[in-house]
Every structure is written in structure tokens, then in C-alpha cells.
Image 1 (cartoon, rainbow, N blue to C red):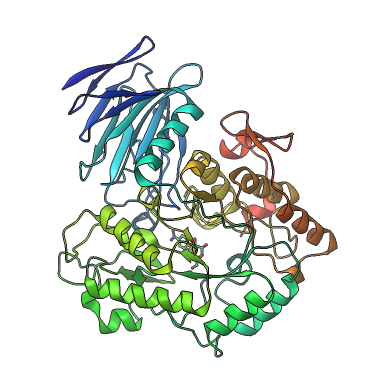
Image 2: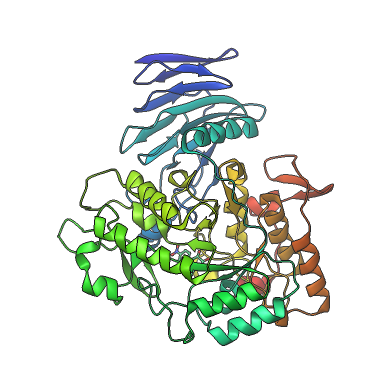
Length: 500
Ligand code: 9PG
């Protein structure tokens, strides 16, 4: 049906499938395709990435789109490959076009079903694979409409209240090179430093898919949890419970438990570790039983903070035993995991589809991996690539998501050794994490000099008062921080950081 939205005199003609209902600050529109005829011509469009690593941000409708280009393997891993339109402006679940005076017209889905929002110089459109989610339409100041959208999403999907506190993670220093002896030494050095969580990242398991102690942990994972606990930290553990590498025991012995392709073989659902990998078909009772066993084991070992990674793979299109929509299947799987671990275990989602994770995860990564360098020379122009700049840009464009869960912009650095980031670049990472209110690092104390140790201590102890003064400008404890030059690509960085 045709409908004309009236925003205090600004009239927006629209095509919708049912009668819009006025709510405070906007309208709720029944599920189904939506097209809003905006009067702004070529203007800025906010595109939102599907998962933690997917690019988000503002780009003009008459300029280059934001997204992953010319890399099918990366697109499959780091965005919604089934729907992504790399050369026209669109994104996942929510989008907005800029009007005059900082006001924006927002269209956002209030639920699941792989909703998409796109725009050109005339239309802001929304559609979904599965038309089950209502839409929110609003026109107003940018921060206001995004806050109103987030509040409506969490009214429908929930909002968990777990707090991570300060986190030390093994990834951005040791990567996969961890073992129980190195962990013991690192934990001992950290004793007395202001961290709540010590989180072991990838590298403890023999292979992705088999969640038992690997060869580096001969005393078993419970022993390492006790070491961490003994030093006064909450034991944290990384795993990717919804995927399996082809060489894993799980994939080799039970290929029938995996999401299948149309050819009746396990479907490739992403690429990492120099390989492709598969997804578990979580609609099968046996897979639910397997997940129950895995999570009872981890919690039994003593881990109370879980970083669940590559979770999007549980929400990709493919053949499952029950033909439910993939985002509903994903959310059901996470709810199952939550019911096994209980309410008091903190769950940080990484590589998660953002909206389907609301109300089930305590926190979510909101950008690509950080790195000890500014830009990734290997994949120039891929905003989902590893690096400090990409991490800042994606994360700061998702500041509004704080209302949905804790938002993790990834680790910050204090170390000047083994690091190509200069002081200003490291500071920008720390400012971003202060703004997002999630503080973590991977710097081993042994890698820091005396001043750096003091900086780490002070940073991890403080909680800042954050005021937002513009799209990318903030006041942190009264200090003005403007990230605009970084986001718009006009920041001057040291040349060395570009050569990695
Ligand atoms: C462990 C790492 C760390 C890290 C995670 C994740 O898009 N990608 O292809 C892609 C691959 C790996 C990746 C992120 C994105 O890293 O974000 O913090 O836990 O796994 O293997």
C-alpha cells in the first residue's frame, strides 16, 4: 500500500505492506518490503555490516560503496555473502540516509530473517529473506534515531547485563603459539595487575572442531584454569563451536552433522587457518547434544568467560535437517548454549551476526581484528582486513550498539616493542576502547618497559566519562578526542606502519 510518512512537515511517500503505527519518535511498519522515497538526492548512506567483521560506516550514494570487493572467500567469512551487493549501497538490518542539519532518515529491522537495507539518490529500501520482522522508520538527529532503533530492538530481543570487566587475551601477542608453561609464566607476571579476565585464545585445542586439550596442554585445561584462577583472574577461553575444519575428528567421523550443500556434501562456509571449514547443523538433536557436552566440559574445567568465535557460520544459507530461517536457527543455537552454561558465564560473541545476537550474548566484537600495524598492505582497500585503522573505523561506526550489548573494539596496545604503531596510533586505539567502554589488551608484562606498565595499570583501572560531541568526536573525561581524520582517511600515519 502507499503511505506518506509525516515527520514534522517532512513528507516521505512510501510503499509498505501494512498500516504503519506511530510510536514515540517514529513509526513501526509491519514486516514486508519497504521503500521510502527520500528527497535528499545523492547523500550519505549508513551501511551496517552483517557480522562482527563486516564493514560499517557512512558513504555517499554517488561514491564508492563500503564493503568487501573482489574476494569471494573473504566475503563468505566476513559478511553476508548471500545478500551482499558489493557495488551498490546496501547493508544488513539497518540503514540511514542523511538529510539536512544532521538529521537522518533511518530504516531498521526489529528482528531476524536476514533483513537488508539499501539506498540510492531516491530511495531508502528494506527487504528480507524471511518477512517476519517489523521495521522502524524515523527521521531525526542521528544519535537519537539510532538510539531509538537500538532500544526497540532490545525491547524485542532482550538486553543482557553481564559485564566483562578488563580482559587480557593471548591472541595479539602469542597467536596460536600458546602452551601451559607460557600461560603460567604470563599469568604469574600479570598477578596484581588490574585485570578481571585472563582469556586463552585460539591455539589450546588440537584442531578447530575438536574442543579438547591440545598437545601444548598435557596437564589438561582444568589445570590451566586453576592457574588463572589462583592468580585472581576469571578464566576465559576461546572456541569456535559451530565450525569444524575438514581434518577434525568431528568432520571426519560425522559429516552428516554438518550443514550440507545442494550437492549433498558438507558445505564450505568460510576460510581461515589456510583451509576451508564447515558448519554444524544445529537443527539436529545430535548436534545439540554435542554442544551440550562441549559446554558442560568447558564450564566444568572452570572457564567462566567464553569468547565464541566464527559464529556467523551457524547462520549461513545451506541445507539443514529442519528448514527454519538461518538466523532463527543461529539464535536458537546460541540460546541452547546459554541454557547449558547458565546466566553467570560471560559470553563474548566474535564473528557473530549482530542483530540475531542481541539478548543472548553479553558482549560482541564490533570490528575486524586489530593488529600491531596501522593498515594492512596485503589487502589494501579491504575494510574487513586486520589492522588498527580498520578496527577503529568499524568499531566507532557501531558506537550506537552499546545499547544492545557490551561492544568490544578489540585489544589495545601499550607495548612499543614488537609494534609498528606509533604513540598517536596506540592512543587512538585506547581512546576508541575507552569510548566503547570495553578495555582489553594482549601485551605480556614482560614485553613492556616501566612507563608502559604504568600506562597499562592506569588505563585498566580507570572508567571514563564519555560524551559524544559529533559523529566521530568525543570528550573523554573532559579531553576532546576527534577520530574524524582517521575515519575519513585523512590522518597522517608513519610510513613504517604501512609496510608489513
Ligand atoms: C583466532 C582469531 C582471534 C580473533 C578473531 C578471529 O574474516 N576473517 O577471515 C577472519 C579470520 C580470523 C579472524 C577474524 C576474521 O580472527 O577475530 O580475535 O580470536 O579468530 O583464530
